[in-house]
Amino acid sequence: MNQTITEFMIVGFSGLESSRHFIFIMLLLVYFLIISGNITIVLVIWGDPQLHTPMYMFAGMLSFLDICYTAVTIPQMLVIFWIGRVYIAVSSCLLQMYFFHSLGITENYLLTVMAYDRFLAICNPLRYTTIMTSRCCKFLVFCCWLCGFMSPVTKLVLVSFLPFCGSNAIHHLFCDLSPLLHVACADTSDNVIADFIINSCIIILTTLFIALTYIKILITILTMNAAGRKKAFSTCAAHLSVVLIFFGSVAFMYIRPQKIYAPAYDQLVTINYTVLTPLLNPLVYSLRNKEIKKALKKCLQINLRIQKM
Image (cartoon, rainbow, N blue to C red; front, side, top):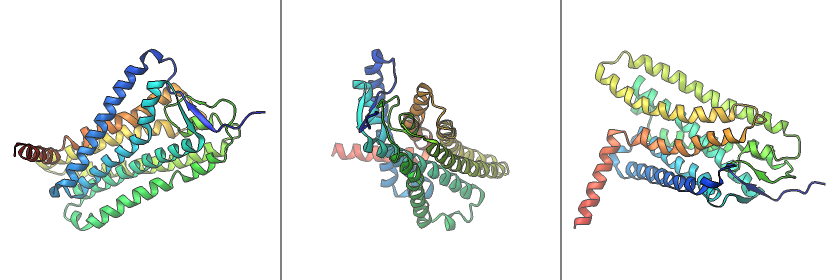
Protein backbone atom coordinates (compact mmCIF):
# COMPACT_ATOMS: atom_id res chain seq x y z
CA MET A 1 0.00 0.00 0.00
CA ASN A 2 1.34 3.45 -0.95
CA GLN A 3 2.10 5.79 1.93
CA THR A 4 0.64 9.29 1.76
CA ILE A 5 3.31 11.92 1.13
CA THR A 6 3.64 14.74 3.67
CA GLU A 7 6.48 16.60 1.93
CA PHE A 8 7.96 16.91 -1.54
CA MET A 9 11.59 16.86 -2.61
CA ILE A 10 12.18 19.42 -5.37
CA VAL A 11 15.29 18.43 -7.32
CA GLY A 12 15.37 20.94 -10.19
CA PHE A 13 17.52 20.18 -13.23
CA SER A 14 19.02 16.69 -13.44
CA GLY A 15 22.55 16.11 -14.70
CA LEU A 16 23.93 19.51 -13.66
CA GLU A 17 25.84 18.49 -10.55
CA SER A 18 29.16 19.81 -11.87
CA SER A 19 27.79 23.27 -12.69
CA ARG A 20 25.28 23.79 -9.87
CA HIS A 21 27.39 26.30 -7.96
CA PHE A 22 28.19 28.29 -11.10
CA ILE A 23 24.47 28.50 -11.91
CA PHE A 24 23.83 29.54 -8.30
CA ILE A 25 26.26 32.47 -8.61
CA MET A 26 24.78 33.58 -11.94
CA LEU A 27 21.20 33.32 -10.64
CA LEU A 28 22.13 35.21 -7.47
CA LEU A 29 23.61 38.00 -9.58
CA VAL A 30 20.50 38.11 -11.78
CA TYR A 31 18.24 38.15 -8.72
CA PHE A 32 20.21 41.08 -7.30
CA LEU A 33 19.75 42.95 -10.60
CA ILE A 34 16.01 42.15 -10.63
CA ILE A 35 15.45 43.38 -7.08
CA SER A 36 17.68 46.46 -7.35
CA GLY A 37 16.31 47.45 -10.77
CA ASN A 38 12.65 47.09 -9.83
CA ILE A 39 13.07 48.71 -6.40
CA THR A 40 14.80 51.64 -8.12
CA ILE A 41 11.83 52.06 -10.48
CA VAL A 42 9.31 51.92 -7.62
CA LEU A 43 11.24 54.45 -5.50
CA VAL A 44 11.88 56.85 -8.38
CA ILE A 45 8.21 56.87 -9.46
CA TRP A 46 6.98 57.13 -5.87
CA GLY A 47 9.43 59.93 -5.01
CA ASP A 48 8.95 62.18 -8.06
CA PRO A 49 5.57 64.00 -8.18
CA GLN A 50 5.98 64.58 -11.94
CA LEU A 51 5.79 60.82 -12.46
CA HIS A 52 2.49 60.45 -10.60
CA THR A 53 0.63 59.87 -13.86
CA PRO A 54 -1.27 56.72 -14.93
CA MET A 55 1.44 55.39 -17.24
CA TYR A 56 4.15 55.61 -14.57
CA MET A 57 1.85 54.40 -11.79
CA PHE A 58 1.21 51.25 -13.82
CA ALA A 59 4.94 50.90 -14.55
CA GLY A 60 5.70 51.18 -10.83
CA MET A 61 3.05 48.58 -10.03
CA LEU A 62 4.57 46.26 -12.66
CA SER A 63 7.95 46.57 -10.96
CA PHE A 64 6.39 45.92 -7.54
CA LEU A 65 4.66 42.84 -8.95
CA ASP A 66 7.96 41.55 -10.35
CA ILE A 67 9.57 41.91 -6.91
CA CYS A 68 6.78 39.83 -5.34
CA TYR A 69 6.67 37.38 -8.26
CA THR A 70 10.37 36.53 -8.07
CA ALA A 71 10.35 36.36 -4.25
CA VAL A 72 7.97 33.39 -4.48
CA THR A 73 10.31 31.26 -6.60
CA ILE A 74 13.91 32.47 -6.99
CA PRO A 75 15.07 32.11 -3.34
CA GLN A 76 14.02 28.44 -3.45
CA MET A 77 15.72 28.01 -6.84
CA LEU A 78 18.93 29.38 -5.32
CA VAL A 79 18.78 26.79 -2.54
CA ILE A 80 18.21 24.01 -5.09
CA PHE A 81 21.23 25.04 -7.15
CA TRP A 82 23.39 25.34 -4.00
CA ILE A 83 22.56 22.09 -2.20
CA GLY A 84 20.87 20.11 -4.99
CA ARG A 85 17.37 19.75 -3.56
CA VAL A 86 14.72 21.31 -1.33
CA TYR A 87 12.23 19.63 0.98
CA ILE A 88 8.86 21.37 1.27
CA ALA A 89 5.64 20.39 3.05
CA VAL A 90 2.66 19.59 0.83
CA SER A 91 0.67 22.53 2.28
CA SER A 92 3.58 24.93 1.68
CA CYS A 93 3.97 23.58 -1.84
CA LEU A 94 0.30 24.23 -2.63
CA LEU A 95 0.60 27.72 -1.16
CA GLN A 96 3.65 28.47 -3.31
CA MET A 97 1.78 27.27 -6.40
CA TYR A 98 -1.18 29.49 -5.53
CA PHE A 99 0.87 32.67 -5.01
CA PHE A 100 2.95 31.98 -8.12
CA HIS A 101 -0.18 31.66 -10.28
CA SER A 102 -1.95 34.57 -8.55
CA LEU A 103 0.90 37.02 -9.09
CA GLY A 104 1.45 35.81 -12.66
CA ILE A 105 -2.24 36.28 -13.52
CA THR A 106 -2.22 39.69 -11.82
CA GLU A 107 0.69 40.71 -14.06
CA ASN A 108 -1.26 39.39 -17.04
CA TYR A 109 -4.20 41.65 -16.21
CA LEU A 110 -1.94 44.61 -15.41
CA LEU A 111 -0.26 44.40 -18.83
CA THR A 112 -3.76 44.37 -20.36
CA VAL A 113 -4.72 47.50 -18.39
CA MET A 114 -1.48 49.17 -19.51
CA ALA A 115 -2.45 48.46 -23.13
CA TYR A 116 -5.83 50.10 -22.49
CA ASP A 117 -4.04 53.10 -20.95
CA ARG A 118 -1.87 53.50 -24.09
CA PHE A 119 -4.99 53.14 -26.25
CA LEU A 120 -6.70 56.02 -24.44
CA ALA A 121 -3.57 58.21 -24.47
CA ILE A 122 -3.01 57.79 -28.22
CA CYS A 123 -6.50 57.30 -29.64
CA ASN A 124 -8.45 59.60 -27.28
CA PRO A 125 -5.90 62.18 -26.06
CA LEU A 126 -8.49 64.92 -25.41
CA ARG A 127 -10.55 62.68 -23.11
CA TYR A 128 -7.60 60.87 -21.56
CA THR A 129 -7.28 62.95 -18.38
CA THR A 130 -11.00 62.84 -17.70
CA ILE A 131 -11.23 59.06 -18.16
CA MET A 132 -7.93 57.84 -16.69
CA THR A 133 -8.17 59.68 -13.37
CA SER A 134 -6.24 58.74 -10.22
CA ARG A 135 -9.36 57.07 -8.87
CA CYS A 136 -9.80 55.09 -12.08
CA CYS A 137 -6.15 53.96 -11.98
CA LYS A 138 -6.48 52.73 -8.40
CA PHE A 139 -9.71 50.92 -9.25
CA LEU A 140 -8.12 49.18 -12.25
CA VAL A 141 -5.08 48.12 -10.20
CA PHE A 142 -7.38 46.82 -7.46
CA CYS A 143 -9.34 44.80 -10.05
CA CYS A 144 -6.08 43.33 -11.40
CA TRP A 145 -5.07 42.14 -7.93
CA LEU A 146 -8.56 40.89 -7.06
CA CYS A 147 -9.03 38.95 -10.30
CA GLY A 148 -5.44 37.69 -10.12
CA PHE A 149 -5.90 36.20 -6.67
CA MET A 150 -9.40 34.84 -7.36
CA SER A 151 -8.59 33.12 -10.67
CA PRO A 152 -6.41 30.23 -9.35
CA VAL A 153 -8.71 29.39 -6.40
CA THR A 154 -10.46 26.61 -8.38
CA LYS A 155 -7.09 25.05 -9.28
CA LEU A 156 -5.96 25.21 -5.66
CA VAL A 157 -9.15 23.63 -4.31
CA LEU A 158 -9.09 20.78 -6.85
CA VAL A 159 -5.42 19.93 -6.36
CA SER A 160 -5.69 20.11 -2.55
CA PHE A 161 -8.07 17.12 -2.62
CA LEU A 162 -5.63 14.93 -4.56
CA PRO A 163 -3.76 12.19 -2.68
CA PHE A 164 0.03 12.16 -3.20
CA CYS A 165 1.85 8.87 -2.75
CA GLY A 166 4.76 6.90 -4.14
CA SER A 167 7.73 9.03 -5.20
CA ASN A 168 7.85 12.49 -3.63
CA ALA A 169 10.46 13.83 -6.10
CA ILE A 170 9.38 16.84 -8.18
CA HIS A 171 11.61 17.47 -11.19
CA HIS A 172 10.97 21.18 -11.36
CA LEU A 173 12.38 24.37 -9.87
CA PHE A 174 9.39 25.09 -7.62
CA CYS A 175 5.85 23.87 -6.98
CA ASP A 176 3.69 24.21 -10.08
CA LEU A 177 0.56 22.40 -11.19
CA SER A 178 2.05 20.15 -13.91
CA PRO A 179 4.65 18.42 -11.72
CA LEU A 180 2.13 18.11 -8.87
CA LEU A 181 -0.37 16.33 -11.10
CA HIS A 182 2.31 13.87 -12.15
CA VAL A 183 3.02 12.74 -8.59
CA ALA A 184 -0.67 12.42 -7.66
CA CYS A 185 -1.95 8.85 -7.30
CA ALA A 186 -5.52 9.54 -8.44
CA ASP A 187 -7.40 10.56 -11.55
CA THR A 188 -6.44 14.16 -12.40
CA SER A 189 -8.76 14.63 -15.39
CA ASP A 190 -10.88 17.29 -13.65
CA ASN A 191 -7.72 19.21 -12.69
CA VAL A 192 -6.38 19.07 -16.25
CA ILE A 193 -9.67 20.24 -17.79
CA ALA A 194 -10.22 23.02 -15.23
CA ASP A 195 -6.64 24.27 -15.58
CA PHE A 196 -6.80 24.26 -19.38
CA ILE A 197 -10.13 26.14 -19.46
CA ILE A 198 -9.07 28.76 -16.89
CA ASN A 199 -5.68 29.38 -18.51
CA SER A 200 -7.13 29.50 -22.03
CA CYS A 201 -9.85 31.98 -21.06
CA ILE A 202 -7.44 34.29 -19.24
CA ILE A 203 -4.59 34.23 -21.77
CA ILE A 204 -6.64 34.14 -24.99
CA LEU A 205 -9.09 36.88 -23.93
CA THR A 206 -6.38 39.25 -22.65
CA THR A 207 -4.19 38.57 -25.70
CA LEU A 208 -7.12 39.22 -28.02
CA PHE A 209 -7.93 42.47 -26.20
CA ILE A 210 -4.30 43.65 -26.41
CA ALA A 211 -4.09 42.68 -30.11
CA LEU A 212 -7.27 44.60 -31.00
CA THR A 213 -6.08 47.54 -28.91
CA TYR A 214 -2.77 47.70 -30.75
CA ILE A 215 -4.43 47.40 -34.14
CA LYS A 216 -6.46 50.50 -33.28
CA ILE A 217 -3.32 52.22 -31.90
CA LEU A 218 -1.37 51.41 -35.08
CA ILE A 219 -4.14 52.82 -37.29
CA THR A 220 -4.13 56.03 -35.21
CA ILE A 221 -0.33 56.32 -35.22
CA LEU A 222 -0.21 56.13 -39.01
CA THR A 223 -2.35 59.30 -39.19
CA MET A 224 0.06 61.30 -36.96
CA ASN A 225 2.91 63.58 -37.99
CA ALA A 226 6.49 62.31 -37.85
CA ALA A 227 7.28 63.61 -34.33
CA GLY A 228 4.07 62.27 -32.79
CA ARG A 229 4.48 58.97 -34.60
CA LYS A 230 8.02 58.49 -33.26
CA LYS A 231 6.98 59.23 -29.67
CA ALA A 232 3.95 56.92 -29.83
CA PHE A 233 5.96 54.10 -31.40
CA SER A 234 8.65 54.44 -28.70
CA THR A 235 6.12 54.16 -25.87
CA CYS A 236 4.15 51.30 -27.42
CA ALA A 237 7.21 49.32 -28.50
CA ALA A 238 8.42 49.08 -24.90
CA HIS A 239 5.07 47.80 -23.62
CA LEU A 240 4.62 45.45 -26.57
CA SER A 241 8.08 43.94 -26.00
CA VAL A 242 7.20 43.13 -22.38
CA VAL A 243 3.83 41.67 -23.47
CA LEU A 244 5.39 39.41 -26.12
CA ILE A 245 8.07 38.08 -23.76
CA PHE A 246 5.63 37.38 -20.94
CA PHE A 247 2.61 36.13 -22.88
CA GLY A 248 4.69 34.02 -25.26
CA SER A 249 6.30 32.01 -22.45
CA VAL A 250 3.13 31.71 -20.40
CA ALA A 251 1.06 30.58 -23.39
CA PHE A 252 3.61 27.87 -24.19
CA MET A 253 3.41 26.56 -20.63
CA TYR A 254 -0.25 26.85 -19.76
CA ILE A 255 -2.41 26.69 -22.91
CA ARG A 256 -1.99 22.96 -23.33
CA PRO A 257 -3.20 19.79 -21.63
CA GLN A 258 -1.10 19.34 -18.49
CA LYS A 259 -0.47 15.69 -19.36
CA ILE A 260 1.93 16.89 -22.06
CA TYR A 261 4.77 17.34 -19.62
CA ALA A 262 8.47 17.40 -20.49
CA PRO A 263 10.41 18.45 -17.34
CA ALA A 264 13.58 19.69 -19.10
CA TYR A 265 11.71 21.89 -21.60
CA ASP A 266 9.29 23.16 -18.96
CA GLN A 267 12.14 24.17 -16.68
CA LEU A 268 13.84 26.13 -19.47
CA VAL A 269 10.62 27.97 -20.32
CA THR A 270 9.99 28.55 -16.61
CA ILE A 271 13.34 30.31 -16.27
CA ASN A 272 12.32 32.60 -19.14
CA TYR A 273 9.22 34.01 -17.48
CA THR A 274 10.29 33.73 -13.83
CA VAL A 275 13.82 35.13 -14.22
CA LEU A 276 14.43 36.78 -17.61
CA THR A 277 11.10 38.63 -17.87
CA PRO A 278 11.38 40.37 -14.45
CA LEU A 279 15.00 41.21 -15.33
CA LEU A 280 14.11 42.73 -18.71
CA ASN A 281 10.98 44.60 -17.57
CA PRO A 282 12.77 47.53 -15.86
CA LEU A 283 15.35 47.69 -18.66
CA VAL A 284 12.90 47.56 -21.57
CA TYR A 285 9.90 49.35 -20.13
CA SER A 286 11.18 51.85 -17.56
CA LEU A 287 14.92 52.57 -17.53
CA ARG A 288 14.86 53.41 -21.26
CA ASN A 289 12.16 56.01 -20.60
CA LYS A 290 13.45 59.60 -20.76
CA GLU A 291 11.30 60.88 -17.87
CA ILE A 292 12.36 58.05 -15.55
CA LYS A 293 16.04 58.51 -16.49
CA LYS A 294 15.66 62.22 -15.81
CA ALA A 295 14.07 61.57 -12.39
CA LEU A 296 16.74 58.98 -11.56
CA LYS A 297 19.51 61.42 -12.48
CA LYS A 298 17.88 64.08 -10.28
CA CYS A 299 17.76 61.65 -7.33
CA LEU A 300 21.44 60.76 -7.78
CA GLN A 301 22.41 64.44 -7.92
CA ILE A 302 20.47 65.14 -4.70
CA ASN A 303 22.16 62.22 -2.95
CA LEU A 304 25.59 63.41 -4.07
CA ARG A 305 24.87 66.92 -2.71
CA ILE A 306 23.74 65.47 0.62
CA GLN A 307 26.91 63.36 0.90
CA LYS A 308 29.11 66.40 0.21
CA MET A 309 27.43 68.46 2.95
